[in-house]
Every structure is written in structure tokens, then in C-alpha cells.
Image (tube, rainbow, N blue to C red; front, side):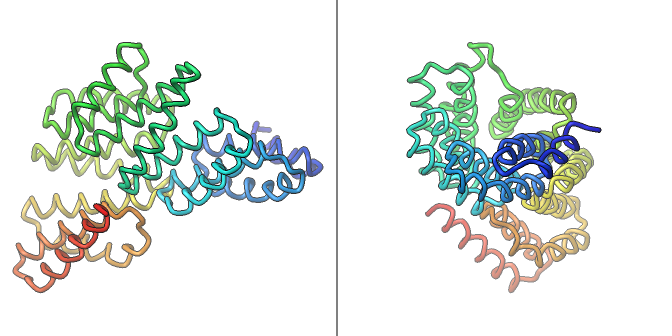
Length: 329
């Protein structure tokens, strides 16, 4: 019997108090194995039991796991709702370790919603806790996340400064390599972008980390597209869709398909590009990430202009501008 089968069997037979502890172990396992539906299944089943026992530490852990399951699928509204509940519990407990975890998680959500002001606020709160307690592992976690944030904000000098601090401590993580790939993509340094992204892919492959692979191949596809290596970009888009589909990350799949359509258009195959763009129209309501939709409508508008459909060009271009205005607050 596998470890998880044993835990599930224990859970079904345990009394209410023991079910709580077992559920947390099950949620840990399913987070690591990217089975987010089962995280929510067992987390939500055990949460009322923890509430009944007034076990706030267990409530925090279960709620945080549920939030993570949503966040890792790009369901950021639901994730934030859970994280804010966890934050209230951590504040009531006055537990700095729990507060660090939830601030770091809220940074991740705000970052992915492109709410940079809020992301910086949570990031600095988490960093203050890590600095105060001189907790090196937490310092590395929050430093990598702030690095990623500064990359997306276009504050490349600040991002490079943070990366140097991390590397100086000898604490380079696979996530740092992946995002150094993104940094050098933005700086149009193909050699360093590919070096760090391929290093990340190698490590994620050894770890069987499908999420990390989906994100890394997305970076690699963008690097190839930036340098007009269309065939390589399409192969990497296929990889993104393969790994992101397994995990149910609809936003990343949608963004990869947008990239595929854009590549077809750049290759002069407007009909294939149009077919992909049109196939995504009925999925837009399922995508929470405004920047992904903004990019989709912008590239669709560009294709419509190339095909002489100026009415749709204006329609989709206006939607893209509206989304940009919302994202910029």
C-alpha cells in the first residue's frame, strides 16, 4: 500500500480529532503531487472538525493549503479569500512564522493579479519578519519572490541587486534560475536567458515538478519567439500546454495558445492564427489574469488588422486597452 493510500485509509477510520492531523498530511502530499482537487476535498472536509475543536493552528494549515491549491491553478480570487482568512488566524495567534507564510502567499496572489502596490506591501512585511528573526530560509524565499516581482515591474536594477545578494550567500534556487531566465529575456540577453532557463528545466525535470516545467518552458518559448526561432518556440509551447493541462492551470494553457496563434501570424499563416484565436473566445470568461487577456486581445487585434478586418481590430484593441487600464489601476 502506498503512503497516500495508507493515509487515506487512516483518515476514513479515524475519530474527528485524529482526522484533522491526517488531513493536513494528506494535503501536504497532494500539494507536492499537484493534485489540487484532492487538497480541497480533504482540506474542506477536515476544516469544520478543526473549527469544532477550536484548533486555530490546524485551521490555519488547512485554509493555507486550500488557498495554495487555488493559487497554483491560477484561481487567484479564491486563493486570496482563503489567505485573508488564514491571515486573521495568524494575527490572532500572534505567530510570526505563520504570518510570514501568509504574507508570502498574499504577495504571490497580488503579483499574479498585477497589483504591484499590494504585492510590495506584503513582500516587505514578510521580509521584515525574516530579517527580524534572522531566518535564512525565509529570507531566501521572500528575496526570490521580491526579485520576481521587480522583474515584472521592470525594475531590473533592483532585481539584479537582490539576485546578487542571493547568489553571494550561495542560496540560488531553481526558482531563481527560472526567473533569471525571465530577467535576461527582458534584457534581450539570449545567452544568459537560455542558460538560466535550461538550468531550471534540468532541475525541475529531476524533481518531476510539472508546475516548474510548465513555467520554464513558457519562458523558453518567449525567448525563442523574441529571436524569431518560430519552430523552437512552437515546440516549447506544446510543452507548456502538456504540463499546464495536467495541472489544470487554465490561464497558462490559454496564454500558450495565444502565443501559438501569434507565432502562426508572424509566420504568415493568418488562417491558422485566426482559428486558434477564435477557439479561445469562449474561454475568456474562465481566465482571471487580466494581463493574459490583455495580451490575447491585443494580438488578436493585430491579426485582424493584418487581415483587413478593421471593425474587429478596433473591438479587440479597445478591450485590450480597457484591460490595461484596469490592470494599471
